[in-house]
Image 1: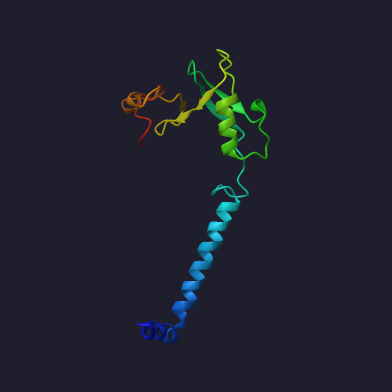
Image 2 (image 1 turned 180 degrees about the vertical axis):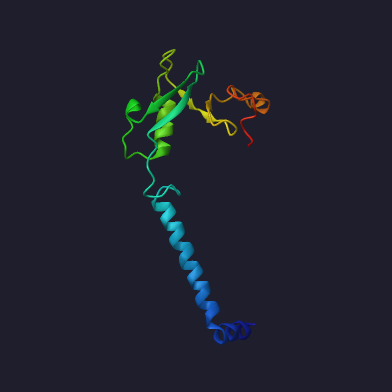
Length: 134
């Protein structure tokens, strides 16, 4: 069995070279994604503002990085977590928010449904369509 596989590599070295090239390319892609924070890319602009919904009253408002003590060098995931923990609602004063969803039909933000049961029949408050499907 070993002789058959050795003969294949020796008769057609292009297969071996191609296999090594594919492995090297895959390794480079994997390492670049890990170093750049999971695919966002090193040159991606950080999110400047997030639209959030108050966890208490569902009021929609924008939160900037400076509003919650997030530096421009913090990645977007840290910004999202800090926004959910630190954002203070301008309407009711509650500290804590959820990231607002964006309707796939009309593109406007909305507060997410309170429960998974409610999300099944949920309609966008702006266009009245199901916001989950295009």
